[in-house]
Image (cartoon, rainbow, N blue to C red):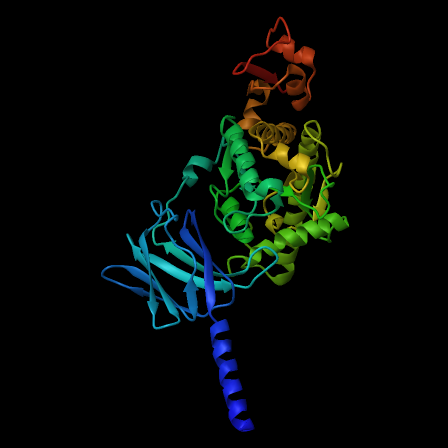
Length: 437
């Protein structure tokens, strides 16, 4: 009798274990990037899956073992994707099948991600385009003479990596993309510069991919825009970071570098040719290149820091250094700019306003331009136009003449006389000429 009871007890335990093993699909997210469509399934547990492709018509099929669908795909927008529709169905009692009917062929890949401090378990399905559109022609940027200075602007995080989370569900990825877009516009409107937006929308890019894009377009400078966060809501202020080859210059910098570098785990995974060099020669070349770019980064960082300091409080009054992976390019001067603490309620509200985003972009732009005015690269249009340089600033709501003068490090009287103003009253939309020399 005891044996029979034990047998039934084990049987019930096995049934309970099988029931508990089923994983619920609790949510779905879709992100479109220039080269792929990413679908992220949010799960309450780990899951086994198998993916395969069918033709005539083209489909991608994903079979999920012991899975239940607790959400739907009705709200997913498919108009800018190669997906025509998404179908679901049960296979047997416990298995789930997802079918992606396609409008065009794709190269599919998939992987699972374990739960972390922000998300639960996830299944990521990447549908790579066979034909990747080129948003900007290299010939539009690269010239051998009289060329524009190319500034690569990288909005941190993106897609399923939201970055820091502020009060009221303010996401870092959205704020920094807005600042980056305003910054690109400023550079594009400057005849001596060209802005390159590394991340153009709400999608994820691996850190190495970001610098690879900048290198592909032969960027002169790489700016990575972020919004900081800390465990205490009282932390506030903007910061500018350059790469450190010998470790972090402070515990804060070390913490930030480690936090940003971890983002590269999401997603699975120059101009100096050292392939044909010996190990010793390659090491020397890389060291020389890194030293030169680091020196330029630190110098430019001081210009930017001064301009940001006239706009908002600084968390650190000097350019910090840390081992940020996104800054590790041997041939491009690079800076990471924390526009403020999104974990601070006051700064989060300020960072989320278009007015402040535009002013932060202007401060960064002005710092970069002032650096290059003092260090014009040979062969660029800027090097030939130094004597004719001046900014055009369009007055926005809330601007004052004193604030504009402070942003460009000139006196109000000089700004007034240069524009032949009879008073300090300005109006929205008015164009002001900003002298640079």
